[in-house]
Image 1 (cartoon, rainbow, N blue to C red):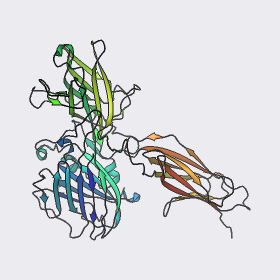
Image 2: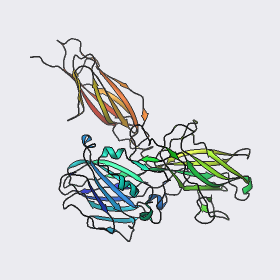
Image 3: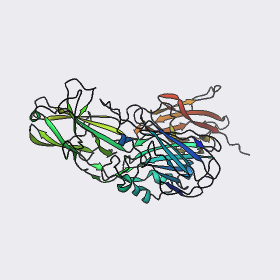
Image 4: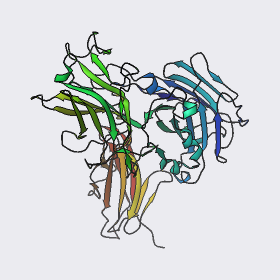
Length: 514
């Protein structure tokens, strides 16, 4: 399950985005709030859980924890994304517990249960606009201090410093800035005056998680197996986009680094690597009843986190190095982070990567198998997006004589009925790929005059899905004396659900000469 943010918006009055504004709320300072504004009532339900290969455990409380929550609110009009400033709200949630809500003049935050909160606050500006609401959790203080960006376009380019490994919250996050794993979500809605608008967010961690299961471990005769002692992430990206990229480059173009080693520095004290079996016993640290009877393994889970990286070069792609004892001899190995096709595994945000260490048949080495699953295998945008999402159309470009595009009222392409070279191109992005269908009026009996050429698909490696380009050629009428006006509909459909679609209206027109 994920964090769900439900935003019933109870609107008052005012004018949207009169200027760049920020409201920082904590338990010690009295906030200054505009007299009029829109009230947002936010609930966080069912904290993000980890349900992955053979894993009956939910995500840890620390992986779900939100200690700082920020909202960025922008106008949704495309032309304003580069020009109009934002509203920003930063809520300190470090001291919020079930028994200790935060109640100040402009904000009330309550914790209902582990990973479940309600939050109510007032917009500094008014309502009656299409807006984009971006929710960010657990970003470091340095991000707030240096992020003087005032447009959505600039926020899309923002990079988060991850030169040290992302981590769960510390015991004193306000002192060291370690609030927890950063998260992101956004939605686009019309906020109407004097009405309640429901918005649901699915919070997505910026980091991926890498777990290691060592099945070459021999508890009773350690000298006959492999003992995992430590591991580290190597070739990790130093920076990460806050908002997933929708076009190349998919991940930050930056240098990489190697993170610190993670292991049991003091055996028996806060062990990172534990021994797991299906039943309790001597030398068993944790019990997993889903394991096969008689099996046993070491686990380094919930400890290695890394940002997204789409480097396809095996030599420089993100991977993991392990150290330990194999048959009582020191052993070190950089695990080839490749899939069954022998190509580098792409590291995607909010995914969980499981490294299985198995005994080799001849017992002179160990083998590695890498499996990939979503951090939340129940319902995530990468693997199981809703089939009801219509393709998003962009980059409509007309070419040829007297061909033009207008989206003031509806997406419309117009061309002269006698044009011999009229055409247009566009891009469609959809989680389940897209296709097209041309629909002529029922009473039309002439030849087909709209031809569509579908381009190759491109995986965006982001929540948006699959991108395709289309070229549409419009056949003109040869005789100007007999030419007539014609129309057609071009349906751009979700392949998985043809009812989820957008439409481009196509017209051939005749210009009357006085």
